[in-house]
Amino acid sequence: MAMQISEGDDDDLYYDAASENDFEAEDESDSDIDEDETINWDEEFRPPVHNFQGPDDQIKDDFRHHFGTSLDILRKFIDDSMVEKIAMESNRYAEQVKRTSPRAFIGWTPVTAADIWRFLSLILAMTLVKKSSYKEYWSTDPLVSTTFFPSVMSRDRFISILRALHFVNNATVPQTSQDRFIKLGSFMTDLLMNFQRAIHAGKVLCIDESLIPFKGRLSFKQYNPKKRSRFGVKLFLVVDSAMQFVLDVLPYQGKSTQITDRSWISLVGFGGAAVLTLLQPYLDAGRRIIIDNWFHSLKLARMLKDRLTYVLGTVQKRRKGIPRGARMTRKLRKGEVETFSDGDVLIERWQDRREVLILNTFMPHGMTEWPSTNPNNQRMKPDTVLLYNKTMGGVDNVDKTIKPNQSLRKSYKWYKKVAFYLVELSVYNSMIMYNTTQNDQVGFRRLNYEAFVKSIIHNILTKFPVARKPRGRPSQSRVSVPLANMHIPERVMKENGYPSKSDCFHCKTKLGKRTITQFKCLACEKRLCIGSSVFNCFKFYHDEMSPTDFITAPQLGLNGILHPRKSALKSNRNHF
Image (cartoon, rainbow, N blue to C red; front, top):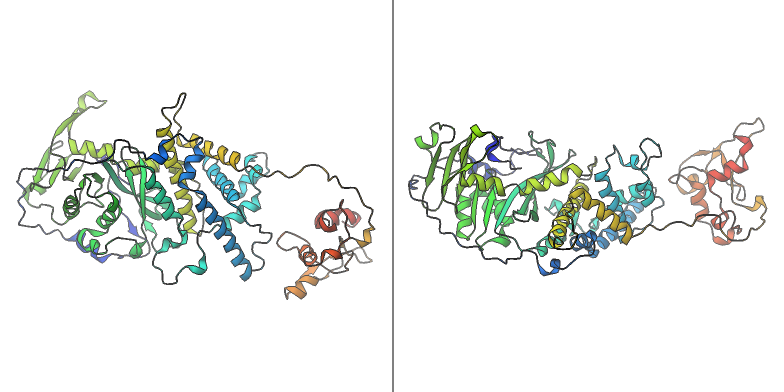
């Protein structure tokens, strides 16, 4: 993550937590500090800059017209086909697991697109209401209870959807696939394509990295000791500096990272190859690219200039081609500047709180007095440093907006964390589009991220309302049925008043295991377990029976079966 270079912060360093040397070619390129003796660094800087050719209005026609609600914009990014595919793959995954583990997903009801939207509304609400675990959101303790979450979805339903959440059919994933992000199916690809359909990329773009916290086992997990979340999944982001809109994302996944041309790694290192991959749709248009010293190199600047794309950013002294010698090594006084140019590239060495090295291909050297709150601290800064500080914070602004309101939970499934981050990224872009497209409306007020999330949650529950269960007693007429003919669990007692225990019929015959139970069915005379929804043999046994085996009793419930716990308490109250 880039910071203002005048603050004197150290540069971020990333380490591969799983492998020490994923890219040997990158290490060779970065460590080669031999100077190219054929370059004359005393030439006058003459940047033949190509004027940027782009539309005045960055927002494309499909997004320019007025949207009714904030949800309308979000659904342009996460469209209906994407949500329906998530619902389909989640249902498929639940059925696949149930075939191999019969006791998994007991009581699973297939999800619909409306269920997925309500589920996402709860995920977004958790970014606003912080609690220690998912279960705390459904707590009935008056001290911490929150009535909103149980009003939308039951806790068990939410946990079931979270467990089943899937984006691709596991049976169709090639075993030899090198793309680790194939676990997200087409969700990530479709989302990024929708981002790029929203606006025309502007004149100035910035590229930086972002880290999604994750401490689980993962081969391409990154480690940065200077980050608050030291371990995580790294993503490279392209942000339009004018609108602060995220245009594209490239996930880092070690050797499997989807670099367009693998030969770039040996030429400009892995960071430079990532920049070239992200910029493929934006080359040959005279754009200005702002990057930091993890990506930047002299070779990268020349390659981009050949494609009519100009770059500015900090650079490390050890990069290949950077001039050496007395002028580069002598100690500078604070505020002093040394410049180097070969006619096409300008390198500025400026001493602030620490030494700063700026390399650019489009901006001539100049100094501007920068105002300070301290009248005794008025100082001159290079124009390139001022432009860098003004335009490089695009990705930092995304992190600053999203991360204080992230719903982070411990999870073994890294791709679910990435998916939730992409949802939050789409909410962020929707906020940018909402505030930009509707600022000409009468009475319009800009919404910050938190207010925009609240608006989306309200709109989701309005668009996809929760189905309310009918309250009160059923209107059917009561039927008098002998109790002995009803399928009701009854606790069996010995003559001495102690419970009589025996093997469960269903566990023994269907599951091939022995389970002790105190209950039997009053009509079937079968010993059956009763308990939670996961281990309720009483329910499973009667679900397999023919409907004609039941005596209709509307006042007792569906198919004449009482709720096991309630019926046992009513019919055997004296035995407890």
